Amino acid sequence: MSVDMNSQGSDSNEEDYDPNCEEEEEDEDPGDIEDYYVGVASDVEQQGADAFDPEEYQFTCLTYRESESTLNERMASLASTLKVSHAVAKLVLVNFHWQISEILERHKSNSAQLLVEARVQPTSSKHAMVHSSHHCAVCMQFVRKENLLSLACQHQFCRSCWEQHCTVLVKDGVGVGVSCMAQDCPLRTPEDFVFPLLPSEELKDKYRRYLFRDYVESHYQLQLCPGADCPMVIQVQEPKARRVQCNRCNEVFCFKCRQMYHAPTDCATIRKWLTKCADDSETANYISAHTKDCPKCNICIEKNGGCNHMQCSKCKHDFCWMCLGDWKTHGSEYYECSRYKENPDIVNQSQQAQAREALKKYLFYFERWENHNKSLQLEAQTYQRIQEKIQERVMNNLGTWIDWQYLQNAAKLLAKCRYTLQYTYPYAYYMESGPRKKLFEYQQAQLEAEIENLSWKVERADSYDRGDLENQMHIAEQRRRTLLKDFHDT
Image (cartoon, rainbow, N blue to C red):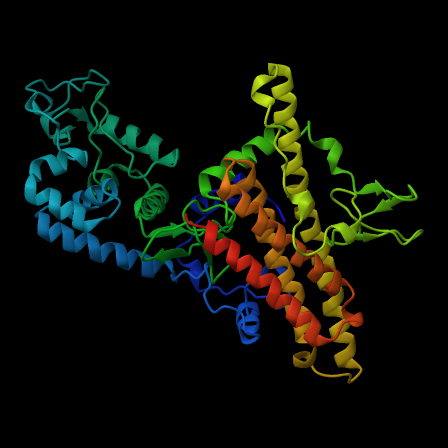
């Protein structure tokens, strides 16, 4: 489970995008633990869980042609209403994030100002001054009048300089951002002005890709799939920080920021948290070890499963991997080791003491964040073992896949719940102290307790009957949904 936001947000589909590649289908692996949302929710709801799903979000996956058609329809309609060219209409739409109602409102009140704000008309008459000189303002060469080109601002440059200007910018990946060469002139160049100036079909194809990218990225209801070389576009009615999944490459991401899904933490907070983790990685290295000593007999123990309920192989002592406390004291009512105890007197102490307290607080949350990340990786291995065990039983005529599918669903639901739990720690780290944080920590503790109970049973599935395991699945998912319903409000 990578948590590198930068890798998720790569623009690989900008450089290598092929509009014709959407017809290709990728093989889907039905045994992939990453698909833990698929099929599990309905199974849990059949067990009697609350039907309300705080993560429910309507979205549509569009191919290149479908999204291009959608954009062109809106552009043509607006161009007709504003009585401008299609290329100018696109620049207006980009500037106002394709919110047609706002554009029409502004057009009705002040049509000239609308075009100024969209950067297709100059702000005042002084910028629109017609030059009588036949000299190019860039190369200073005398140029015949028919070879001088300008936008609405009337800043005139020779065709050769315009060609070089557009070529350099397009090679640098610029689409809508190609603008006038005059200093301090904000006017953007419509696409029908740029295309004739590009010297090769290869450059024109690149320019089309960059324009399409910019049109989609500026649209408040659309997002490019961040999957490697994936041409798909996700469309929603109401843009929110919600989980979406591409139906071509199966990439899962947050619609609002195009990064890894991070509920209940909001986009700005998770970006801040991951930046902090990267900056402080060396400081936190010492907590990355996979081994700890048994608190009773001191034998070295390696964590080889996702569950935090540990049992010493030597003395059989049950303890918590996180806080090393006796497991019996954890119970199911409140998970004290998930709650950081603030020092109320820290504001009256020295700067050094405050710095130590800040580091202590960060390490507390980082250790739990990282521990759940590792647990997800270990439980993915458990999932594979379950798959192999089911396959073996089916081959030995000990039932069908349907008979044993509940084991697979239990492992998927465990991953789903733990993934949410992992992202509760950045949320808690930045949360202000007070009653709301106490409620959050209580629900976080409840969720963590039920996840560890489920993890314990999944890793020992042969020791528990189906009803017991499915009941624990229901409880864990209910805790997860309750927390998201109360705190995932972005």
